[in-house]
Amino acid sequence: MSSGGRRTDNTFLGYTIVLGALVLLVVLVTVVVDARREERIPAVDYTADALSLSEIAPYQAYAPDREQLPEGWTPTSSRLRDGGALAGEEPTEPIRWSVGFATPEDRHAAFHIGDADAEGFVAEVTMKGEADGESTVDGRTWERRYNEAEDERSLVLRADDAVLVVSGGASYEELETLAGTLEPQTPPQE
Image 1 (cartoon, rainbow, N blue to C red):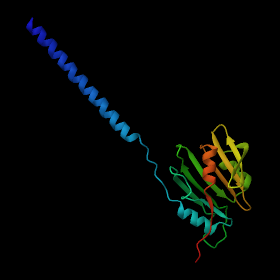
Image 2: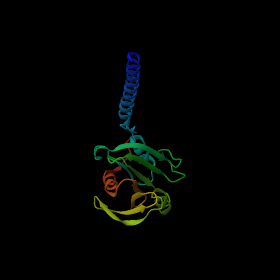
Image 3: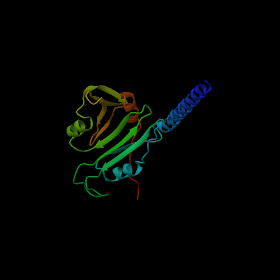
Image 4: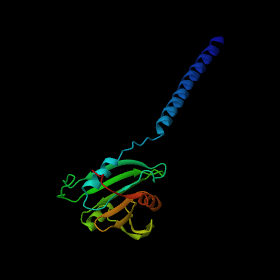
């Protein structure tokens, strides 16, 4: 009878050790996953593209002013299509610039400017968004566009010689915030 009790004690001890090891493994995995959960979005510096745009664009260049952007806005991409032009030369194609941001609400917003065919440019960057009212930002009226299938909102401003578009999955309020930071850019004096 005493050997049966010993066998039960050994079995119980084995189960306890295995259960303890599994609990330890689950706790370890939870700690590692939680440590990696905080997303770090790499920021890009769009200053060089904004400067280049101001030097080569045959239109008034604009760029978001970093100082005016609220905390939590992270620039994530910048792409300048220079139209084949160098400073002081005439471009052979339309000049376009796009700069993207991650918003504090963890959404995407982007600023686009270009002198391509206005209707084609607007259709492309708004993803063929439909008219959705107006927004007034710093006294200027921007046309709202919405693409329901993609849940993309856009603000469109047709300037004299270029089209400015602020778009993305962000709310209209966030897009208005970005539009409110746009400042005219001037090329540096030589």
